Length: 365
Image 1 (spheres, rainbow, N blue to C red):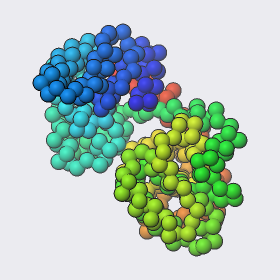
Image 2 (cartoon, rainbow, N blue to C red):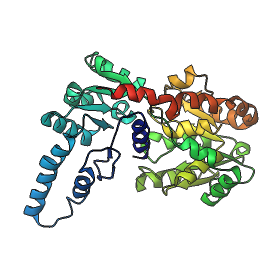
Image 3 (cartoon, rainbow, N blue to C red):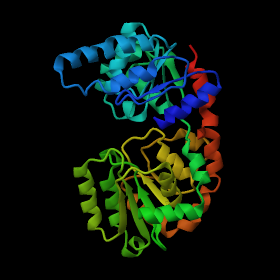
């Protein structure tokens, strides 16, 4: 939601007023002249807290069928982000109520969906005014639907607001936070594996490759496993058990980090490994690259923007992952030199200033 709030503020400077509503918990950010959103979102937030069945049914009916219909009709357009099952329902309501809407795709909406699941959501695509997303998402959608919705597609990219936090955080303060979090050990390279607790991060594959390293390399590194987001206790326990028998210094981060703590983790990482099944230009990876970290990425993941801007990173197949990690550890100083310039290149293509005009054009009626 923070990212969308930033986008809302930037678009307002361009004359486009946007409000942000999270339909899971009805958190809201009022940034337009439309009245009533605060009241209705607050009412929606508490609609499941009533014990009286009849009253609750009437209350929910009022919120969903009257209040939101009235509210949405005051907007020129509704932008539905992350087109998952919950949002699909809203596209149907918008069409039913005659409300113009766009769909903005996020990575897992498309890359981790089967063709059948995308077909189930086709009604929303059919009635949408436009469909937005990064190139790889739009390409997949075009392939699945044989180009039926190509005329609606608009390529957009999210900027990153955490660059400013990273820049503002001094090295001394960053190290102090990292030591407190347990992610920095003296005389060891910090190797961060993945960025959330989902199975799709493929922690087991990364750890198995690292476990094959010779003892001399294991002694040079401290592993950090971020699992504060989307972590399931049973899966986290599996990862912990695997780590416990590897004979390597490690930390699991399972608490939500502040923005400053997150910036510290990025700055104090030396090597970041991303082997998840799919990826659509995730913020964590951008921040690692921005900090000058050596980034190792699965060779099945496609990052055309990085490639077209000559941003340095290392690709590895699963079969060669252990060898790639070993070479990265053994030759870290020499490889690190190649990351020089990544920060400036990344700003030119992934800062909000770089991508905002694309959003302004995509928002046009």
